[in-house]
Image (tube, rainbow, N blue to C red; front, side, top):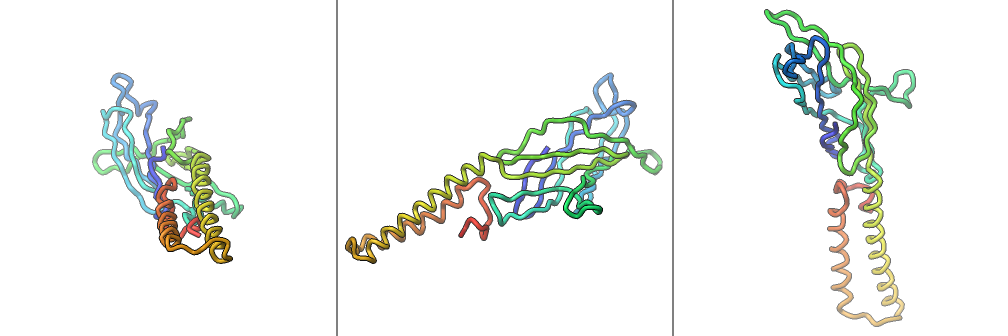
Length: 219
């Protein structure tokens, strides 16, 4: 599952839950039958977790992985965890996410554990639309994940941007009326224009996801 997204740092947090089968699963008490080691194989760095024999099934692990994306084009920004297809630079392929091994005693080398991506319905992160592709190959789980702003976020941003444009147009109309002499210049205009200026800035903090400073929407 997708837990969180750091759009500025281009990093996501994923949660992985293991469901053992065969000789790795103790059906009597719903626990792991053998000790395992889970190693994240993300593009940036590797992190390992241990699962002891007798540990109840259902525990999960969380780790961070880097993603590609541009936060500057908010709210149309999207992010992906995948590799570029070497045969087609415009396409992507799933990238390695975790490797599972069976640990041995007496400093024996670990044994690879066959993994597979079980069908699942991700909980989903509020405000984001997710597309998953999970492939199990030997002891490594490969994942291709794409996330983009959901339709509700785009709609909310559209409403706020409309209000910002409407306020700017209203201020321009009043300024033009005063400049052409259609209405007299009053001292209250200066205070009103100053209030309008400072009212536009806080509107950015009300945008879903709070875009980074310097995004195109600041224009």
